[in-house]
Length: 505
Image (cartoon, rainbow, N blue to C red; front, top):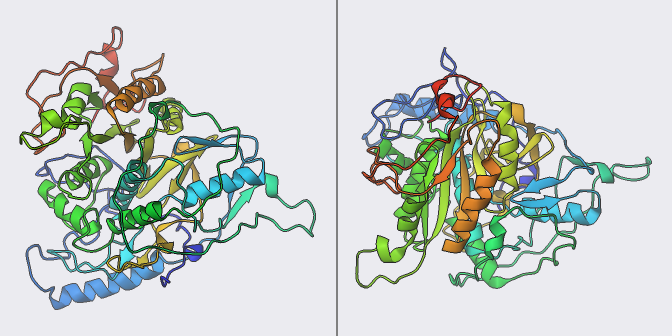
């Protein structure tokens, strides 16, 4: 049993960063990927560690001890605030709709929410190379949000679409209107049965059958309750293996150690500020260089444009693999689209587009957050976003042990916030298993982001994009881009700094 129980892991309110006098930090221009103007926090130890040094000196050790003590207090408090869910409005979570007017629907939502992989700050993990840091408290929240988005993509890739974790925790600090007490004798909330835990040590990496291409369209609320959750040994093993890939160990392919190492190629160090666009490129590199997911690739959009020819060339193994021994076929793809939805604040005109995107089953979430506070958005209800928050510091879990506890990697306390608090800088993620799924995704997403009044927040166009000098950039090419702005929309790009118009990256 892990020493930290998610039932006590509640979210912290505001003030998660140490502020500069101007309230933000602008990344160095030497980085290969330049972040747009953003309100997210920054690293507080960027100058407190010695790049390339061996052991930290006494001053660094003292700083680290003081900062660790402060973070344990700052990110360890429990905040007992209830999240209220409406029974009259549908709630969308990862493309599925939930009408929370019956206990059966609440149970469906509990299983779906509790099955998402939750990745938070950790402490006491092996020291990050080139620094004295043994925790990512206060600076690694965007990396954690990116990890959660990638974890969701891998869950869709490896596990059946209807998979649910049998040991989902009971929901805490929530208020479902349908279950409110009608008399003092009736207790609030819903009693949810617990499940026993079991795990087989033998891992079979056989990939489950593909999902239908129709899953990339808008999905309506199911009329029947999903089948009861049972134990499927293969799925349980894949789930455990997937979580271990995000462990806080240097060898973990998608752990914070590997992501920080890849960030150095863009001029970043442990403790520095990471934005959603930079994290998208770090995730692309991590997947590209891993041996665990050979049939999956990541494409990062250029200038809010997904070039379909670039995606097809990336996914078609007969074209992308030069060796004669490579097998033909189509790689599944995660598409990441960095966007900015306004100037200093979110432009309300884009709220409906964000809702439409989160209704898609092909959407695997949005990494972004609110000013100085990165979050992973996974759904919405009415005018509020549903999210997972990485701002809770937990002890490191040794994922090298086959029976490590999964408890702290799943959240039991759903949280919501108003759309108007959303930071405009974010990265949207999609997943397509096959070529047919990708074509369906293009059609469904194009409809979701279309607007009669203004230019879409991003577009899918045929052809190939330009190479902007990013090393190993997804789909990079020297061909002239074929992105054509529709007639009558040419004047929209003139107000780049205005919150009333879309700001291109």
